[in-house]
Image (cartoon, rainbow, N blue to C red):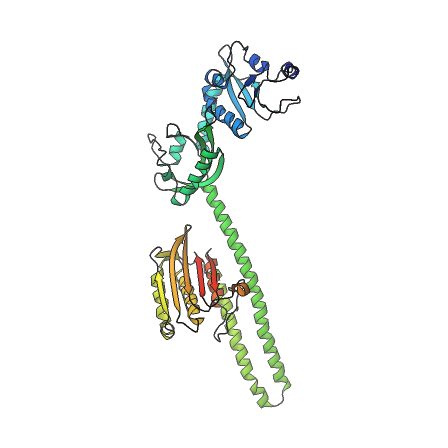
Length: 482
């Protein structure tokens, strides 16, 4: 007997049905477990194989085997309802659990599985369970599947074929499993399955799948390894649920939240700029009018009119800049259209052709990987104009400006990179100020500090991002993710 005799007798006296499992694969079934099925030790062979082949109902066999080896191999607790055949040939329902609260002291080297009996009508229960399973699967859009590593085959239930839009006679193939996922998620799915197969880890993840008709949709996929009697992984069993509607809403809500947060930040900066810049102009204007009032000589008063003209011009420029920022926020609902990078670039070069020729600038392009995007044409025009003119404006004094423009797809995102060989920017000193309004980093007389601010706002207004990589005297690269 595996337990101490006194302990074992105490356990049997309080009528606990359990199995005791030791590290050497020995197994002990309590008297209470046997008597609940009307067996004695002479009637049965106490082993896992005997239990699987002769006692447990075939409906529950695979699930219990998977749970059992998961418990032995990984220490994963489980709770399962199952049908076990009694001596009279009738099935009785038991609830099998590994985390039973017990008050007696047990051998710490052993593991225990406990069985609590229920009273049911077996045939009715099986029929109802089968009905409820189908109804639940259809209502929750949940399909089940099994991958058999030994036979190198995949098995789908009816609901899986329906969700993935395959005909009833379709036979899934393990070799073609990649075609059930969009390109962006094939690697992710492969890594999840390999980890489950090689390390015995369960998974519960959200991933995109692909139907036979090419429709991609979000699912919640759950799976766990299947073990043989030698505790080797021989397959993976799992379910997946179509969660596309809720997932799309979740992504949309998150995107909206990000937009609101970004807009709030821009509005805060906008309010700060308005209060600061307009107050500066009005203060200067008030000062000049006070001076005019204090002067008695008409010639002195007329001399201050030029100051008023300068202040008015500066005030008008500021209002135009602020109006342009407001326009960006209110025009994001403009219709997008397919915009070709080369067409927009040619249009911009025609408008600044004299500057390009005067500075002997060279513009190299590569739009072969990504020729066009769905965007607001005026915004893309503005982005090209600002970044190209900046590259020419802040050229290095010892060389002609060379500008390289390339579009590509990177991590499933549309990307545009504009690089130059100009003066560069001190990122340690100005890295957090590059896209600020009225921020300048060189001593050019025509620098206003508004171009990059406008460009950043246009890109972010359409949920994009812009970043810069720069080195002093080597040049800068602006990277835009649309």
